Length: 182
Image 1: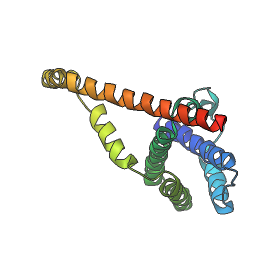
Image 2: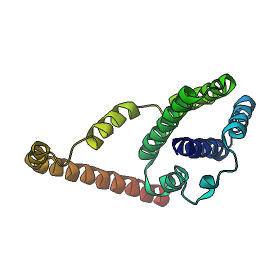
Image 3: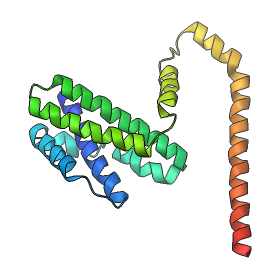
């Protein structure tokens, strides 16, 4: 079961990588393309789970463009790429085939370079915060009381962020209107 899930993740990274590069009017480096093909040949056999209409990352990628701002898209892409990195590390650790371990390392190096060059920033720090919040035990009475105690301040901060976003949007719209009049 875990092996099937890993394979689905791997297939997604192959599609994801080729989609990013095609979208950016670039091509996958030949040696990376060869490594991905060799990994696909080794890991992906006739697997019906790959085509079950439940993609892992592709649906989120489709939504990225329409629903999120550029900074949010970059953060989400960084998180996706980090997830792939963890998948490849796991596959490397579980693999008995040295050649496949090398191919996984090669693909992972390319993904890491892409992430460092195109999606830099504070994503690691933000991811740490997100993981901290995801790990909160909602059923813990102390956590519940602390959350209630902090609620007003958190709510005010959220309102301020929304106001800043609306203010920025109005500024951009005003700028566009001024340019159109010029």
